[in-house]
Length: 314
Length: 153
Image 1 (cartoon, helix red, strand yellow):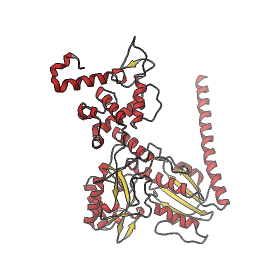
Image 2: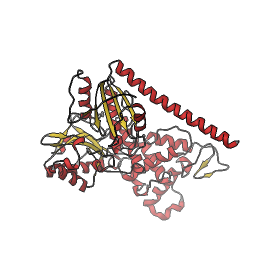
Image 3: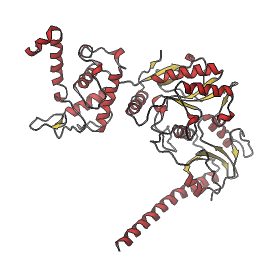
C-alpha cells in the first residue's frame, strides 16, 4: 500500500515510487554507502551512525558486487579502495548499457533510468537498485570483448604463430578484441586493400600474467593488448612478411609506407613512432593510468579467466 | 661524532648494497658458465633498463611477452635477462644497446649471434632456436642475426 503522500503523483507513478522507496529502505540499510564507510565502526553514508544497531551493510554490498562479478577481494565490511573500484566497475557497466539486450528484471525496466547511474564509486540509491536487480536476476558482468573472424577482413591473414584464445566462444580462425577496436580492424583492412598489401596478424588480445612455466622478466600490466585494444602484425609484401628489423621507414617499400600512413590517418597509433620502436604494433591508445583502462582490464581479463561467452562482432 | 656515525652507517649500507648486487651478478655469471659447461645453450636478453610491471611502454610489453613465452616454451635453454649495468659487469664486450634492447644467443662458448633491437615476434625466436639447436658448424640467418664474440669477464 502506497503512503498517502504519494497520491499527488497520480495512480501511474505513485505505486512505482512507493515500491522504489520501500525497496530502497531494505538496500544496504537505506544508506548511500561510500568510501571509508565501515561496518565495525558503524560508519555508513559518510557518517558514524551513533546509536544505530549493528549492521553488515558493506559486507552485503561486497557480497552483491562479488555475485555480479565486480569484486574479487575479501568480504571485510570495509569500504576501501577495492570496494570503491568494484562499485565503479559496476556503474561503468550499467552506464555503458552493455547489459540492455539481456535485461529482464521488471524492477530495472520500470523504475530505474539508466541515465541516473554515474561512475562515482559511491553506492547511491540508483546504483543500489540496479545492483539488487542484477543479483535477483542472476546477471554477471562480461566485459567488452568481441570475437571477430579473420574471414571478415579480406586483406587479413592469420600468422602461423597466432595463438587461438582458449575460450569456448572462439574458433580457430577468430581474433578477440575490445568492441571499439573492431572499427580499427576495419580501418586497417581498408588501408591494406587501398595500398595493395596483405596484413598478417600475430596477436591481438593477450592474457595477463606469466606463461605456464614462469617468467624471466615481469609481465606487463598496462599494455593495450591486455584490454584487446592492440594488434601485432607483419606486412606481407609480395607474399613475404616484413619482419620488425626491416621495418625502418627509409627501407620500407612505398606500398607499406602508404599502408602505415593510412592506418595512422584513421586514428590508430603505430609503434614505429614510439621512442623505443615497435614497428609491428598498432593500437587505439587508452590511457593506462585512467579508470576506463583499469575497468576494461579487470572485466576483459576476467572474461578470459572465467571462460565466459564472448559475443561475436556483427 | 653524530655525523661520523651517520657517515659510517651510510658507508655500511652502500657496501652491503654493492655486495648484494655483486652477488646477483655473480649468480648469473655462474649460471651462464655452468650452462655452457653442461652444453646448454644460453640466451641473454639485454635491456637498457628491465621494465617493471607498471611500465606503460608497449615496446617493453611486447618484448617482455614474447621473451617470457619463448623461455617458458624452451626450457632446454638457459634464458637470462639483464640490464645494461649488469651486462657491463658481466660481459667482456657488452653490446652498445643503441636500440635499448639486444639478445645474444650463445650456442657454445665459441659460437654466438646477436639480434640488435627488441625481439617483437616469434619468428625471430624460431630462427634463433634453429641456430641454437644446430650442430656447432651450423649457419645462422644472416638477415636477422650478426655474429658476436661472447666472453664473460
